[in-house]
Image (tube, rainbow, N blue to C red; front, side):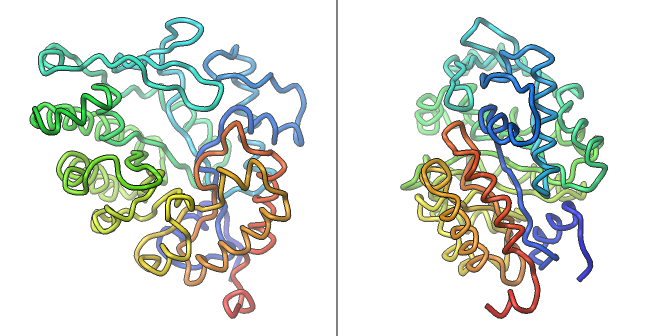
Length: 369
């Protein structure tokens, strides 16, 4: 088989076919790991802190270092998302276009703490934002940098996450019972925002849409499977259908135990599922045996214990086992079981990158193992 570039590997895997190598991907990575890994590649890096608090020069350096990591370790896809769309409230808080307030955290992504639409009366007077082309700046930079040699991914918050952030989690769940039409109105609004943003993403040249909509704990889903179908999947499915009509591949992201809704996700037509958290019962072999011929698996190198506290040798062995359990016949993209968060060891991240290339070649000897 001829050598493929990263985009070709990713698309081939999402079509449940074998490429030359098992593809390698970073679903998400925080500032600290970018800087920790980047120290092996460049100097002049800023001190780790939230991207939103960096000056413009440090922001540009961080983005350039992120791209350098993808080049140096031959990572096949690049994750992009909105940057610069929030306004700063104070040193600890920012606010997005929907008016949701977030508290910044040194441990990863900001935490929603202010929810502007708590009642149906709030909703009646609420004017949602329109997607802005300028918020796709990171996608534009990535496409310009990699010239089609790496697949471009976009993290789009799904209807569940967007809705509960606007309303508050407890409020969302109680209104499922007390005022379901209110929940539907918010969900439709969020779906319409995402559909409008999807048009911008297609125009920008996106390859893979990630519907990022965390819906589960390590034990089970946050809402019942029936409620998931009615209040969440009904709307996300319309986003998936439109993305497919526009020629995109679509990956479903959620942490946690997805078994209660797995058949619904499969029926929805996603091309891939991520991140397959092993601590939540989403072991790669179990998922591969159940549905690996129907959906591409993106995961599931443990980022809870192994990448923070293991050794590079242990990481390499985990990569070997993941490839053994998930790669045959295609449909595997190796990445961590969630983001590369501030607690991971950069040396272990590098060990993961290198092990995928070392052990992930699709040849006769590999397939016969």
